[in-house]
Structure formats: C-alpha cells, structure tokens
Length: 238
Image 1 (tube, helix red, strand yellow):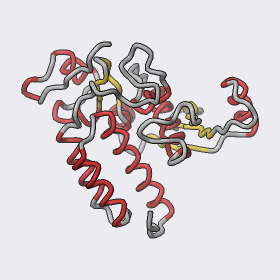
Image 2 (cartoon, rainbow, N blue to C red):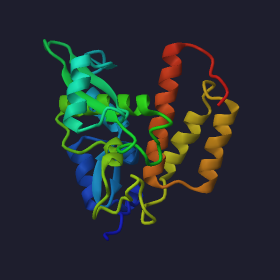
Image 3 (cartoon, rainbow, N blue to C red):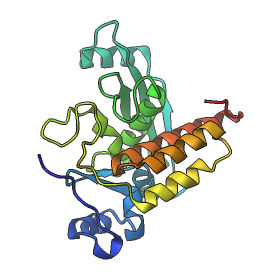
Image 4 (cartoon, helix red, strand yellow):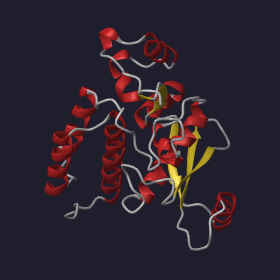
C-alpha cells in the first residue's frame, strides 16, 4: 500500500504542489485550504472551487444553488444506481447560473448508507452532504476542474488506494495542517453553534485530526452554519 503524500510547509513545498498552485492560480499561502493531497493525489476543496468560480466569472456574475430533483430525476437515479425500494437515497440537484448563459451547469449529488459512512455518516447529515456534492460537481463543470472534489472520496471503496472501506483514511494519513486547525477554531467561534457543539470541536482538535478528517469537518461546519443563516433562527442544543 502506498503511503500518503506529505504536504510540506510553504517554504519546503514539493514541486508538484507548486505546479498545481500555479496551474490553478491558487496563492501558495492558501494551497492547504484549496487542495488536499491524499495518497499522492490532489483533491480540490469547496473553498478551492469557490475561488475558481470567482476567478472564472467574477463576483456577482454567477449563482450557485441546490434544488430538490424532480420525481422523474429521482426515479431515474435510483434505477441507475441499482437501489432496492427499501434502500434510502438522498439526491440534490446542483446548478450554477452564469450571467450571459441561457442554461445552467447541472450535476447531482447523492448520499446513501453505502457512499456516506466515513467521518460524516449517512445517519448524521445526508441532505447537507448531498447538497455539498451537488454544488461542488456543478462548480467543477462550470470551471472545467479536472481534480475530483474532496467530498467524493467517501464514495470509494478504497481498493488499493489507502482509503479504508468505510471511506476514511487509514493510519497513513497526514496530520491536519495549521491552517485547517485555525479555520476550524475560527468557525467554532460562531454564535450560531451551541456550547455543546463548540466543546465537541475543542475535543476533536485536542484528540487530533487527520488532514482528510479536518477537511470534512470544515465542510460539515460550513454546511451547518449556512443552513442556520438561511433559516435565521437560533440553534437548538445538540
């Protein structure tokens, strides 16, 4: 089994990481926020995709949204995935509308107990992760991004990849970067989180996070905060 790639600090950054930063027009000081390396392969994060959208279309020139699919779309996806009637499936339709274009860029995000059972489990946030996958995929289409987004890794079985069957990284994963830890701490200060949630984050940081785990946790916190901002209600105790 190959060992996970080590992303060094900026001053000692491997040539491949520098090349990706240059090709994607990402600032070196933000590379750990925009790109995650797992098993020597780069995966773009939601923050990286949002940065590329701004680079490609500029602020105010595009809109990203997630919608419920039609009954026909939902039924077709179930058939395509070979799911039995009793097997649960959550589907969201991601759309990116760009000023001047008549049609949006469209893709779908799905979650099932089989493709979402790693650090973020299906029983916890199936709708939020389906939404994240849908919008990330649509943004990948809109920006012609070749890198797979980090949220897709959980769907893999990990055969020969160093990723365990439950979708999580094995013991060979890198530790979370200082930038990731700082971002988690900053997000954790939001008044939209409960005291229980903040204490849970402190415990997770203290116990240690892998780079993959930290990226998933960041996405999960952002998704939760986004939903609460949109709902404009006070959070309830976890």
